[in-house]
Structures are given as C-alpha cells and as structure tokens.
Amino acid sequence: MGAARKIPRRRAGAGPKFGLVSFVEKPLTAIHPSPQNETLYRPVLATDPDIVALAASIREHGLQEPIVISLDDYILSGHRRHQACQLAGLSAVPCRVMNIRHTDPEFVTRLREFNRQRVKTVTEIAREEIVAANPEEAHRALVEHRRERARVDAQTIKIVGTKHRAEISPAKKPMLDAVLGILQARRQFWPLTERQIHYALLNDPPLVHAKKPGSTYRNTLKCYKSLCDLVTRARLDGSIPFHAIEDPTRPVRVWKFHANVGSFIRHEMDQFLKGYYRDLQQSQPNHIEIVGEKNTIDSIIRPVAEEFCIPMTIGRGYCSLPPRQAMADRYEDSGKDKLIILVLSDFDPEGEDIVHSFARSLRDDFDVFDVAAVKVALTADQVRQMRLPPRMKAKQSSSRYGKFVQRHGEDVFELEAVPPERLQALLRQSIDSVLDIQAYNAEIDAKKHDAAQLESIRRRIQENVASLLPPSGDTAS
Image (tube, rainbow, N blue to C red; front, side, top):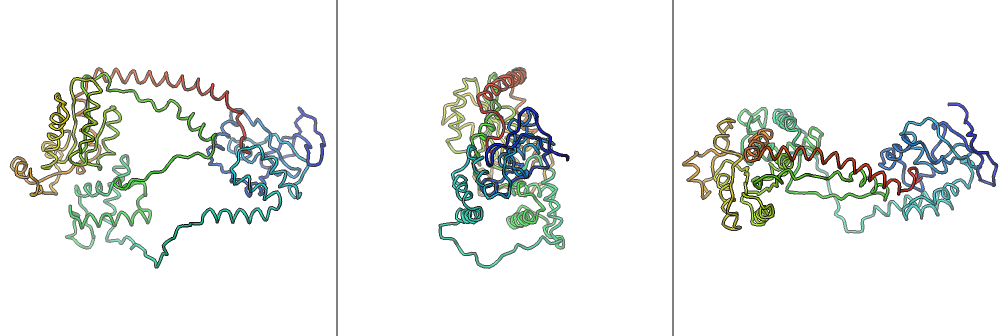
C-alpha cells in the first residue's frame, strides 16, 4: 500500500517517554486492532448500530478525530473508528503515532488510559484496573466473570435421557407438500396458525399417509393432531421457517433495550414524527366498527381496518361486555349520527346469531338506539358463490340448531375456509358500501399534505437537535 505519508499541518515532536512522535496518514490495511482491547472492552462489531451510524457520519463528513497508534501500527485509541472507516470505504486515515510499541510492557496501561474518557460499563472499568496490572490475570478474571454471570442460583431439574422426534417419512410428503403450498400462497399473511392451515387443507384435502388411500384429510381431531405433529417436525428440520407459524393463545413479550444513550437518541431521532396517523374517519357522518368472531382472522382483517382507520374488535365468539361497552363509548365520543357494525363470523347457528345479538346488546344494554349491523362474511350467498365444499355439520346441541337447519340445511362453514385475499376483499366492499367516499378521499389528500409538512418539520428539528449534541465521531473508542 506504500509508505506512510506525513501530514504537513503539524510539526512532529519527539515528546516525553510514550509521548507523541508524529502525525501521519496511514493505509487502513496497515493498522492493526490491539488484541488486548477485546480483553478489556466489548468486541467491536461491524453490525453494531452505533458503528453503522458512525460509518455513515465518516462517509459524509470524514474522520474528525485521528486514530492513535503505536510505533508498530497497533491501535491505542480508535478501534470503533477503525471499524467504521472500513465500513465507510476509506483507504487511508490520519493517525497520531505514540512513542511506544505493541510489545512494550506498558502498552496495555496506555491502552487503558486512552480509553478512560469514553463511556464504559462498571464491569469494563473494573477490568481496566486488572488488565493494567497483569493481562493474563485479567483474561482469567474475565472468563471467571462470565462464568459467574451465567451461574444459576435456583435449583435446576436434572435432564435425564434423550428424546428425538421421528423424521418425516416419504409417506408424509403429499401432506407436507400441501402444507408448504398453503404457506407459500399465504406468505403475505404470515405468521399463520395451525388452525388456519387445517381449514385450508380441507379445501383440497391431501392424504395423511400416502400408502393409505382412505386417509384423506378430514375435519377431525385425529387429522388436526397429525397436522400439528407434522408442522412441528417440519419446523425442527427446517422445511418450514419458525416465524411462519404462531400460537396466539401463548403470547410472548420482549422489551426494547439500548446499549447506551447514543443508541437511544439515534433510534428516537430516526422515529421522530413518524408515528402520525390521520383520522380518515373524522369527516364521516357515521361511526363504523369492525367485529371479527375469532383470533384466526385477526392478521387478515387488521391491515384493512388499519388502512381505513376503523376500530376493530376480536370477539372470540359472543363478545363479552367490556368490549361492547368500549365500542359504545367510542361511538358516544365520536358524536356521529349512527353506529355501523361490520361483522365477520362463521356460517353456522352461532355465527348467524352473533350479528343480531351484538347489535341488540348495544341497543338494549348500552342505549345505542341508532345502530345498524352488517354481516360481511360468511353468508349463505357467499358459500354458494365460492362453492365451498361441505366439511362440517351444525351442532345439534346448539339452541339455534333447529332454526338454522330449517332455513339453510345442516352444512356449516367457517371463516377459515375463505382464502385470506377474498376475505379482505369482502371487508373492503362492505366498508366502501357504508363510507361517504367523497369525504374519505378528501381525508386521503389531506394525509399526503400532512406527511410532507411533517417531514419538513422533522428535518429542521433533527438539525437543531444535532447541533446540541457532541461532535459526531468516536464517543466510545
């Protein structure tokens, strides 16, 4: 890469022992990270958001603070800058050369002193003191520290024996192919539930076992358990991505943390004024609400409800009183003329009754007298139009069985039998039918104007905030 080039703007000086020797420009490839740095501090990773942000700053403004190196080109201060310069694509960087070599016994002490002023964890500060005395002892202490952090004080259960799940046999391939086909066709609706896959299989049922002609997939508990077992094994062997399947009955919560204040500020500034949603329903004469009967359609109808800014409730059958009261309160707060409820429920005795029951409860229990309910899906006409194959019979135990069978027959159909895109289209059609389209389009135009105005404000505020922060560069060398 060639010899180091002197930077003429400063005169080199010998200085005291371990002091400054010169300012030079060095090829980036000629500079070596100090192995001891990782013993004291966190590893410097190219994927670290702070490093990525620092690289972007260097790419735009150049390296503002030279890297400090030894006589034999090992970094004393600037490991993060060095990594960021690589990401930024720099070929050479300015350096301050100190009168010390990497092999000098005092090197680790100097490394520590150069890093004293950066933000460090308490654990890193403690390690600094150990490393300054004895690097080998520091490494031993670090390993011991990590073991201590990993130690579990609680009484643990001893794991006895091994258990391996059976591999997926060739006889299961037709059913696995059918499941994979459903996942691929519904990729935009991931994650799916096993129940959604179950109902999708009923539309074109495969053989559960290829060598058993009578094993056609049916709407039975036995078939459903076979599906769950197959999906589990397919996820473990990599045939199905883990994130393609969810279990909404077992929610998981994780929390957003930040490594330091800089990371938090960068995240907040990047998201600043990006959470604006204009109420596209504010100029509508009527208050509209969406009700879904079950969790399995939540991910399907939620994008449509969000697009139109319409509140959505998942009732899980007959909705309990608190969600109904909340809906009545929203309607009252809106000050609008009428409450319109768009309901998506199964085509069965209960599904047919839910629409009427919900509207009647709002009228009789919560004094919402001007209420109208619309069944978006699933209706008898839709079943005929989509030619849904009959898979289930109405439950005779239902108190509404007789009335339903007399009018529609014994066959019942669940929402999961409808392709997601079709269900979304049905919901959109129902929303369009109750909207004041002219008022809605005016809100869309206003939203675009709002977005442009917010972006202008956001940029000006970001510039002002940036002027209050320390100069961009290596704040944690």
